Structures are given as structure tokens and as C-alpha cells.
Amino acid sequence: MHCLQGRPFRVQCRTADQLGWRPPDCDERPLLSEALAALTRGRTHGADGARFDDLPGARTASRERAQHREIAEVSLRRFWTELQANRTSVAAVKDKHIARLQMLRAYFAGVPARRPPLSSLDDATDPAFIESSAWDLALATQSLAYIDSDLTLAISHVYAAQRQLEDATRAVTQAMYATTDGAAFLSHGLATYWGDCTLLEPRLLTMTTSCRGLIGRWTNDGTGDAVRLQVHTASPA
Image (cartoon, rainbow, N blue to C red; front, side, top):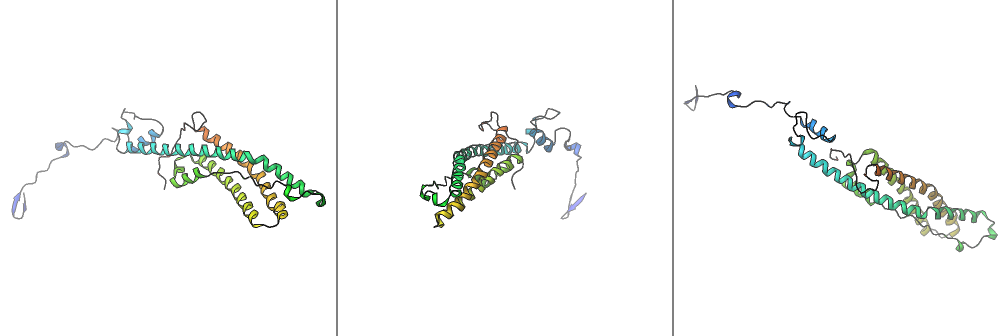
């Protein structure tokens, strides 16, 4: 018997059995961590037949994983298309740059008195027009976090090589507009640019082909149209 504000009252206690409550049996259903790991491996049921996606939080994790997969698929399709377009652009000018470098070297190797006028030389830079929109968008949306790290590294190497070629093109363009000595520009600026192109462009073509091959391994038919990904379940930082 207890008193509250001078009034007696009785406290009646009930046991857990009387209330019909019992602690949850951990062996009755698999833990959420086990369920997520099994879902990643393609399993949908536990040993007791319980569905993993019925567990609290499992459906949310499954939806997030599907969203990550979709983001990664879209990014890889963009990479596939853009890298192919860039490769086509580089391949179209590679042989021109090799031929013009040989022409320029032969011109300055000859006797100066017998050289034709500079105006007879083809001094067009003919740069490869390269895009990096897919890479910039992937960085902005953080979609690289949902793509296999080795594949992301290969794609990053290709875009780094593209930037080297773009830097060389930008440098020769600035020199072309700044110089007033045509002979000096041809023998130093343009010859250096075409020399760099003969080194960078074949390497870039090889890297792009290899990278697109890696992307193709994640696809059903190698066309980049049906990407199958092992996406990460963690969100980007």
C-alpha cells in the first residue's frame, strides 16, 4: 500500500508472462546485416525461409541499391558514347599530324636557299576535338562512387591523357596568335606540337580502346546498351 497526496493506492505488478510479452528470438529471423550481405550475393531468403526484404530497413536498402545501379548504368553509357566519339576524332587526325611533322622536318633539313616559301606549307594544326562532359557530370553527381573502382581508375586515366593532348593544343594555339615570326613558329611551336601529337595520340587511342573493352565486360553484349553492374551500397561522402 502506498500513499500519494495523503490518498492510499495499491500498485499491482504483472510479470512479462502475464502480459504475454517475450523478447524477440534472434534465431527466428536473420539479422539485417546478414540480409543485406545475402541480398548482395543474390539471395532473397534465409535458412528458415523468411524473406530478407521483409526485414526493417531491407526494403529501403534494396531501393537505394537499385537507384545506385541506375546512376552507375547511366554514367557508363555516357562514358561509352563519349569515349568512342573522342577516339574517332583523334583517329581522324593522327595520320595527318604524322605526315605534316615529316614534311616540316624535311623542309628545315633542306638547303635554305632551295626551300620553297613558307606560304607553301600546310600549317593547319587540325586538332582533335575532344569532349569531357561525361566525366565532368560524373564528378558533379558523384556517380563514380557507384562504379567499380578499377573501372573508374581506367576511365580516369583516359581522361587524364585527353587533358594532356588538349593542353598541347591550347599551347600551340596561343603561340600561333602571339608570334610574328612564321619560320620560328613552324620550326619550334608547330613542330613541337605535331611531335607531341605523334606520341600522345597513339597512346590515347590504345588507352581508349582498352577502357571501352573494360566497360564492355560489364555489359551483356559489349555494346554499352545493357550494363550489368556490381554497384556499391554505400552512399558517397
